[in-house]
Amino acid sequence: MLTSVLVLENGYIVTPYRVIKNGVIVVEGSKVVDIGVKNEVKIPADSWRIDVKGNIVAPGFIDIHVHGGGGADTMDATYDVINTISKTHARGGTTALVPTTVSAPLEDIIRAINAVKEAMVRGVEGAKVLGIHIEGPYISVEQKGAHDEKFIRSPSREEVERLLEYSDVIKIITAAPEVDGCLELGRVMSSRGVLMSIGHSNATIYEVLKAVEAGYRHVTHIYSGCSMVRRIRAYRYPGVVEAAFLVDDLTVEMIADGKHLPPHLIKLVLKNKPLDKVCVVTDAMRAAGLPPGRYRLRTIEAIVDEGVAWLPDRTAFAGSVAKMNTMIKVLVDDVGLPLQDAIRLASINPAKIIGIDGRKGSLAIGKDADIVVMDSNLDVLMTIVEGKVVYRSEALL
Ligand SMILES: [Zn+2]
Ligand SMILES: [Zn+2]
Image 1 (tube, protein in one colour):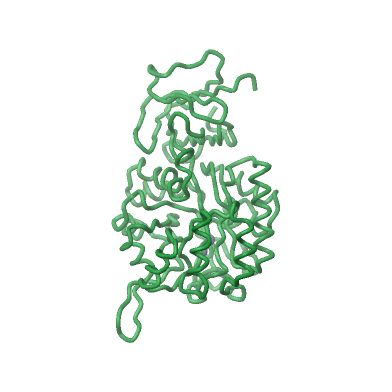
Image 2: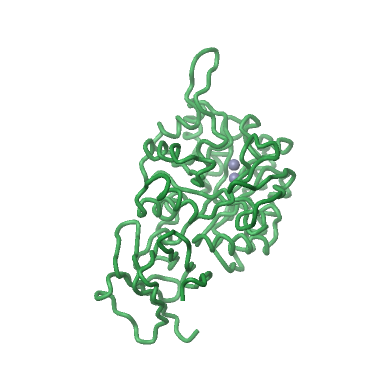
């Protein structure tokens, strides 16, 4: 490229904080260096100018819970599969993601951690890889969802010590705090900066409160794999869902694909939690971006149709096949959320939840140039990751 300055012109720019009509963004290297309405932004002479033709320009999406896409799954544990996941989700506007594991023997999980680490060091061709999300195996059998029961267990001291060696790669751990050893896991990992998340959990509110004391701060895919009001000897106990609503310090993620969470439950979550405590995640499996059919989820089989993955007996969903822009569509078209709020749920909010909002999640001077351009149907026209165009649809130019 002749110049390292990229200018997006004629955008309907939606930042978490303002909407700029006829907006311009100037990107130099990997950073946004200017943003504003046409006349107040100085465009450098030798820049590469792209006319986005009045389309929506938003901060790139951050997906903190994604297993796979484009036929690849994090548990396949190679650099190439992580790269495929990164490229696949970039087509849905994702500019940063956290590949996610499932319950498995520790050695398999460590292979996935090493693959993610390699992707972080070498860099990838799509969405930036931020670290890994370890989902299971320290979860509740009662709330296992698509996790293979034979791998579900308590965290042993040896396993925790092995995982601690990778605390620079591990961003998030989803565990059930009521499982033996999971409070200690929370204390140790949260003190190393890992986001501890309650998920696939059958906890009562009393167990959730102890978890919060032990450093848990987030709830994984609320309503999926989460206990709700439980009756024990006739008494009713709030479960994980109610606790998530009651405890202000807990943030929550939703699989807003319209299947795992139908629009009314998405509304209910947004009515019970302040908007800035909620983010959306795809929880996508390997079939994201591929046609319906049968797919393997490690040792378990899944069927993809009706726009979602199912266990073969159709008793539960086995992950989504959504990309982030699919969920923006659901939030805007089916839930009735203003576009700006929908975009917040996919950008600045997840950035805050994992503590990277100082550099990602918004469009502002000095921030990483992570940008998505969408048409009025919320289909993605272009994705830019740290100043580099990683995806561009035929429809734009
Ligand atoms: Zn899950
Ligand atoms: Zn998951």
